[in-house]
Image 1 (tube, rainbow, N blue to C red):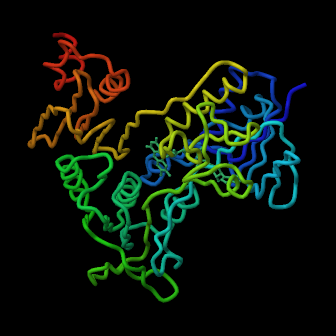
Image 2 (image 1 turned 30 degrees about the vertical axis):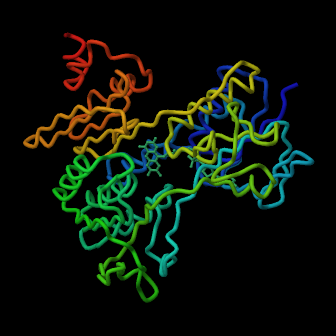
Image 3 (image 1 turned 90 degrees about the vertical axis):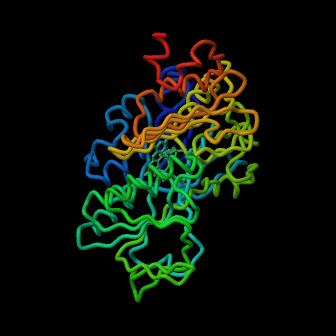
Amino acid sequence: MSEPLVVIGNGMAAARLVEELGQVALGRHSVLVVGAEPRLAYNRVLLSSVLAGELPVADTELKPLTWWKAQGVTLVYGRRASAIDRESRCVVLEDGTQLPYARLVLATGSDPIRLPKPGMDLPGVVTFRDHDDVGAMLAAAGPATRAVVIGGGLLGIEAACGLAATGTRVTLIHLMDRLMERQLDAEAASLLNAALEARGITVLLGADTAAVEGEGCVEAVRLADGRDLPCDIVVTAVGIRPNATLARAAGLATARGIVVDDHLTTSDPAIHAIGECAEHRGTCYGLVEPAYQQAAILARHLAGMPAAYEGTVLATNLKVSGVPVFSAGDFLGAAGTESIVWRDPGLATYRKLVLRDGALAGAILCGETADAPWYLDLIRSGRPLGPLRDRLIFGQALAEAA
Ligand SMILES: Cc1cc2nc3c(=O)[nH]c(=O)nc-3n(C[C@H](O)[C@H](O)[C@H](O)COP(=O)(O)OP(=O)(O)OC[C@H]3O[C@@H](n4cnc5c(N)ncnc54)[C@H](O)[C@@H]3O)c2cc1C
């Protein structure tokens, strides 16, 4: 008889897990997925394209309802799990419904961080995490609207560009002295800065938010230096926090996220965690590729096959059409590395490769990113560059031809 497997969270990691289970453990479990959002699992990465008007909402759906049915999965969505009873092995929903499990997978993702500053709960302050957030932004957007986006990381920049594409007048404020400081060096960040300003976005660096001001709704963002930025909508994109609330309340080992071992198993052998809610070897990831790799490993593990997750070398792509940016690995260049740099100010392109011990350790590409997959493969494999090194900077076609 198939054993009951309950998945909490109907996001990208959960959908991939079901897909992987279908490949390696068909019929072994009777799967039930419970998700708080009132819709089928969707590709969250595409929210930026929906905001920019490049994609209809319907096209973000990961799998149609018929697919879930064909997998034999019971879907309970629009309902939140409120507790895990580890002793009786069941998940409790908000309305008291109990869902028994033999195996439980936590795939609860992350919550956007809200700045602990006055006014953050005013109507007109939105985060950028789900379809409802995008709906709220689009409802307010337009040429008569002024928006302040707080946070100059990947999400903040994509929100700013998406809003700017609707004609909204956008100011992007960032605490640090350069955009995307966790993925870009100063030169690449300044190219990005110029590309955003060319789209009409005002970028303020070193700008510390003191408060959001307004009588009953957003009217301005006040900076710590006293400046007021009048606006009608505020988008906060200042980071995410792994959603480990249920796990913590159930007494599982947690740190920033839900602590898992190389089999994606928590401190309770019957409970697993994958995706952004999981913390593996001290790292909580905020990108989808690790979530997908974890889903594949966990499916194999649940099928009784040998599999271990060893971590993911991260790569970031900014999804703003016309502003290609890629970064991976050790992009700054730690001690003991050497950097090869190629810049063309006229074309606004910049390429930096960081080498360690004769292998590629990191890369930044700005303005032209066609070679990104090749560089990423070299970084991940760590293979010796040998004669490739001399032409590496010119990209795959030229380097390999030589
Ligand atoms: C605008 C945007 C752009 C992004 N762009 C990129 C990108 O370019 N590249 C990239 O790699 N990543 C990107 N990401 C990140 C990527 O979307 C996430 O890494 C990915 O969605 C993580 O998958 P997950 O399943 O762990 O979490 P999620 O997809 O967030 O799914 C978690 C689900 O669990 C549900 N849930 C939580 N608690 C409960 C509960 N108690 N009961 C029931 N359900 C619950 C949540 O409602 C949510 O639906 C982006 C994210 C956003 C918001």
